[in-house]
Structure formats: structure tokens, C-alpha cells
Image (tube, rainbow, N blue to C red; front, side):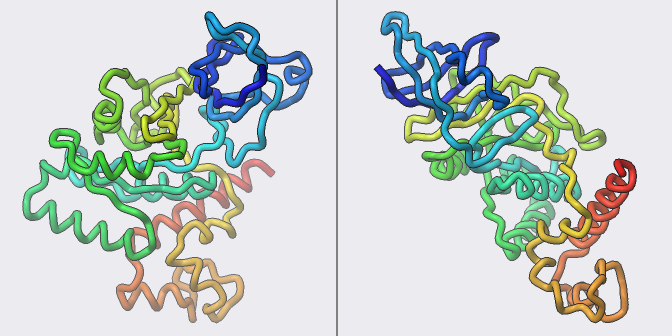
Length: 298
């Protein structure tokens, strides 16, 4: 009998596929093994069910992917919840912009989650509002949460329905605590990311997907580091800053890189406080980083 399902885990020489009949332990048909495409969690596949008790099958066909994150390997990821905090740890705008930039390069929808809201005092709440204004004005979706009180968890669940979602963030922002509210019986291996190095603290890279009752999956992604931004040509960096890219063509010079050149439209908006200085600074930082990488790998 042939059925379809989604790979939720890779275990050495076989895969666990979630189907309408439950989870099925599968190997890969020889013809599929010979292709250069390596199967991974998130892949939608067809399989021949060869045994019902225990459920065992052979994967015969790989469906087309909508996205592929290579490290750690996960296919058909739809969105990433970028967990951050105003305090404990303090807000890191450069890291937040790195997460946003990376998610968009990988064609994933980013959702900004401000966690630990219950810890904020008056001054902190003012900082939260200013930061939310910056990013909501650009068009990013924002959720406020507290793993301690459960605030915002239902909003996350609603956005996760019928999608494959991942969580990312710096060390100590509460990713695992939020995920434990979604799946109380699971232990998550999601690696914390250092704000200094931008790299995960775990070396294991096998991904597991956990099914949600309302449909969709949440990926347990140890080793995921969106702070270590992917390479794009420096001239394309601006395309991942929505508030800047809409001004392309308005500068006096066609080769303007928006770093204080005469007649720069973006400089004019900065002076009018219509663009956040932190966003502009991070755009320039990423631009210079991509330019340097291109020179190194010529």
C-alpha cells in the first residue's frame, strides 16, 4: 500500500515518517538512494507500507521542496520565531537584525517574539514600545510573550498551524521555556547562540519535527545559527531591509551605497528620523561584511 507522509526524524540508516496511519520507520528505495538529493526532516515523501505491526515502509518518492535550510538540514520550513528580550539578557539590535536578515535570505517568514514581558518595569516598557514601533512600521509581525505566565503562547500556536516552524535566538532568551509550554512532554535540544560568536552551543545537527494537534510541526533544530549570516552579494544586502529597498532609485547617484554620499535619499530620511539609525548602521555593517567575503573568496 502506498501512502504519503512527512519525515520527522532521521535515525542513522532509516527515517521516521509521520503519516495518516501514525509514524512509520522507513528505509529508502535503491533508485532514490542513487540521486544526489539527501532526504532530511521536513521532506514530504511517498512510501510503500510493507509492514503494519510494527509500521515499516520504503520511501519511493521525494516531493518538491519549498525551502531547504542546509545547516542543520530541514526542508519546507515556513517561518522562524526570533526570540529576543528587552532585558535578561539586554536587547541586542544587531543580533536581531542578523536573525531577520538570515531568515529572509532563506525565504522564511520571520516573526519577532519579545519574551519575558513579565520582568519589564516602566523604563523597560518604553524601550519595548520604541523597538516594536521600529519593526512593526517596517512590516514585521510581533508577539509579546512570557514563559512564566503563558502570555502569547496561544498566538504562537495559531501562527504555527499547518506550517513547519523553527525557533531561534541568543542564549538565555527563553526559547526552550516557550517550547516546553507548547510540548510539555518533550525535551528540546535547541542550541543557544552566543551573541559574541553567533554560533550554537551544541554540535548535534539532526533535526526532529514535533507534530501539533492543530496541524503543522515545530522543528527542534540544535546547531541552528541565524546570527552567522549567509553570503549574498553586497549590492543585494539592501533588498533584505524593507524600509531601505523601497528608496532605491531616489538617490542622486546610481551607485550610491547609502553611506553619507551627496544626494542620498536614505541619508535624508535618517536626518528626518524616518529610518532607525540602528537599522541603517547594521545595513552598512552587513554590506561591508559581504563585500569583504567576496574579496576573500575570489
